[in-house]
Length: 158
Image (tube, rainbow, N blue to C red; front, side):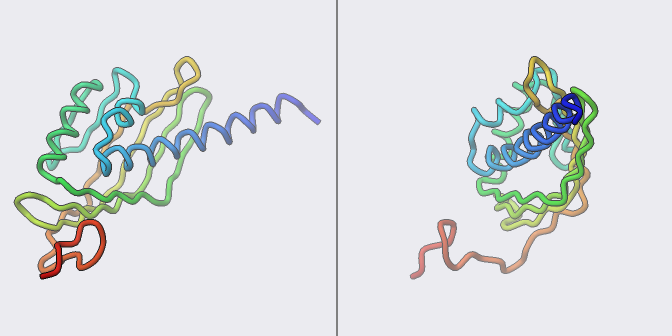
């Protein structure tokens, strides 16, 4: 049995789990307004490219500033990501993951957002993190007459 092959395979599996966790951490950070978690998933020179709808940001401080702006415009966010495709090449990786989000926008009300994230990751000093996350918006649409009737975000019943 080739020990090097096992080590490479184990590294690939551990790396894939680490990269999938970065996407999940991104969701949790935005949904829970967790600035510390959001800071932890980027390399210092990373870019978050959300396009015309949400803006483009380079560097952790700019990314955090964008989060605060988005939290003001969309006080409730619920991100779901699915169908990750990740390709790992040594200490670099690329990926795509589909997004579906429900948010409450201060001007538009309940909104559904769909798109695709195109990701670049690097492992530096043993730590995987985003170097670039680019969002391809498929649609953003207000949800007329949509109202939660139960749960933590439902309006109290009168």
